[in-house]
Amino acid sequence: MELSNKTIIVTGASSGIGAAAAALFAAEGANVVLGARRASELETLVARIGQSGGRAVCLPGDVRDKGYAGALVDLALKEFGGLDGAFNNAGIVGELRPVAEMTFEAWNEVISVNLTSAFLAAKAQIPMMKQRGGSIVFTSSFVGFSNGGMPGMGAYAASKAGMVGLMQSLASDHAAEGIRVNAVLPGGTITPAGGEGNPSVLEFIANLHPMKRMAAADEIAQAALFLLSDRSSFMTGSPMLVDGGISVRLA
Image 1 (cartoon, rainbow, N blue to C red):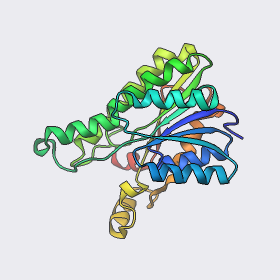
Image 2 (cartoon, rainbow, N blue to C red):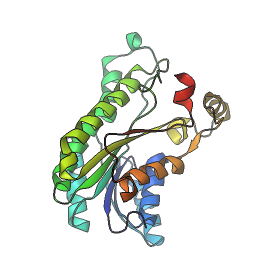
Image 3 (cartoon, rainbow, N blue to C red):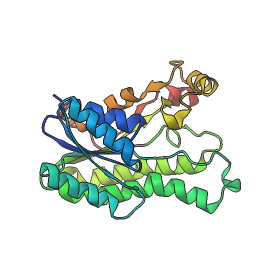
């Protein structure tokens, strides 16, 4: 089992990629500590993981809150004795409009949820991981990376590009301490935030990819599993594209 006896935090765990990752990590032997804003969805997922023989706890909250990342680390320590990894996956797309037409509030919401939360997560998680090493994975995007600019997505692109820069700096700072920091960069993925249930939207997004389809959430979760596992033991500072080739098409 890839994550046997490791304790992993997963944010954005109430649905989509985060929920798929939580279930997969638990099935691979991890103790999972789940975070998201929607308490009922988290509790349902915890129960489902428990029924499958896995170990999971949850703490509802908002990744924009200064103390939330630390509270998740504290829960990992209390319930499972430490922290070995984190999949910092929570994020939003935000308003789709040109920056010149965007309000400060709309801009700040995207930056806070996507990028500032990554800073808060690292600030809370790294001190705990210094005790025995660990692996941190962020969910970035092809948007804002590798010529992946998309119309109307200035705030989202800035937040996800900034996350890659933060990830690489963290990787450089903490590699000698046995802490690896990487990012997974998905392409279009079938999630509630990605147009799920709207066939015309899904078809349009799918056709942007050379593979002519979108990813299932579990496919992105598998990539995160690789980065959290010992199979990627010589990887740090890597923005790993899992995008069905869309960044190649747009390059």
